[in-house]
Length: 132
Image 1 (cartoon, helix red, strand yellow):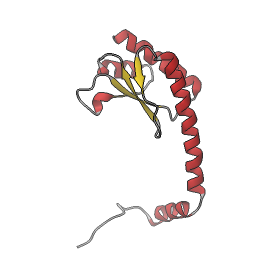
Image 2 (cartoon, one colour):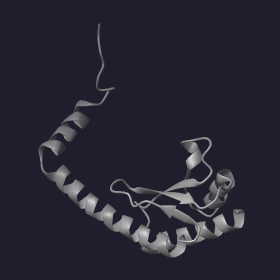
Image 3 (tube, rainbow, N blue to C red):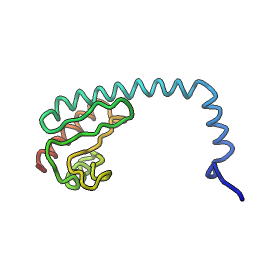
Image 4 (cartoon, helix red, strand yellow):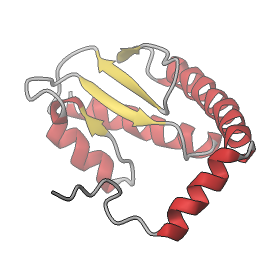
């Protein structure tokens, strides 16, 4: 019987990953990434405290690159998703993960710079208030 464990990864890609993991480059990159994500997380939390304080709550994540926001009251997450999407804002509605959830959205802070984050969260708050 033959078992295929590498799902067809080429020798070159396997060698590249081996070399990366054998050096300190990967671990140096992870250190830099963690610092950058913490800066972005803190910036996002600061913006949420200013813009979302009256419409939602959230926990401060200890890792990762997204924040779960709990809206103060249920909302049509389908309407919210499409209204936000039409404004160039991509959210993950909580009902993707739990069909009965109508109060949570997941936002990522990994890509947007501060001005885009402010702009996006201000627009998202406006959309939420209109849908309510």
